[in-house]
Image (cartoon, rainbow, N blue to C red):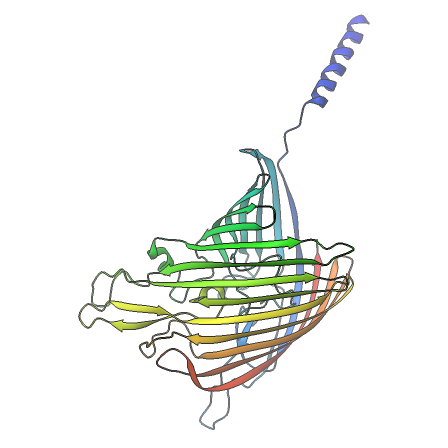
Length: 410
């Protein structure tokens, strides 16, 4: 009996000592996401991705022998490819930092040929110290601001007015107290420049972007707001060998920059952003680059970027059940600013002069579900490209899209 009592006492003491020891953070994964179905009806043929789901702009006029516009024909579709699955992973501290990781994908596919197939969206790990964060992996392009982007119902998320891309990257973010700064070095994967991802790889340098912002949380006596901006640079080397068989190292450099802000008031929130970009094709925008000269013997080309600017604004209700909202965006082709060789602008977007969009929406949130309707009117102006990459002799066409959407979040 004494041995049994002694054994129980020792066991209890060991249990108490173990309970006092700090426990190591445990590995774990938490799944989240949503199931989504969208129905959309267009008044015109469109330039879009994945069966028309990711709308960019209306298709240009295309006249048949009877002078009738072939693209003046509506269409519809119903798809569930936006359905998304996200795994958030937690683990033990490393190098004195809290660690997390995310794997996220959707059934959007990589092209119309693999529609409905699972596609990687985000895959990154983060180390968080007291004032510094290191992110390594695939995440949003640094000009896509998760705290300030269009909350439209459409999957295009405001493109081509809002830069839209996901990129493999290394990003360092540091809190300086009044402001936060970040620096990102990144490459291209699914979202590529007009001549493909090899042009950035051949440069031997990643794209670089530096950004800073200031945030104030809302309180009873004052509104919340966010204001920030950034700038970046990339260099492409489109060719390493000319058509005549000569080695070439000629490249084209380009700059991108943005300013953005958000104001959070008791009843509604206002967001806005303005960007200027050269060769921003990889962010689903309308500028690229062109050839200015070709050596008659070697075939070595000289290049210059084309530019564009864009601006968008949005107002949305802060009501958690019924949420009306209104989005408006505009983008303009600025050309090259110097003489280019005719027909040398890379990609199919050089003949766009401007695009604008207005889209009101209404969301209804109930429990784990969301229902929404959005009316999206987009106008694009097309024409002929002049000697400096600007667009003349333009004609505008418009598309009216009605989008109905349902989500189940988990």
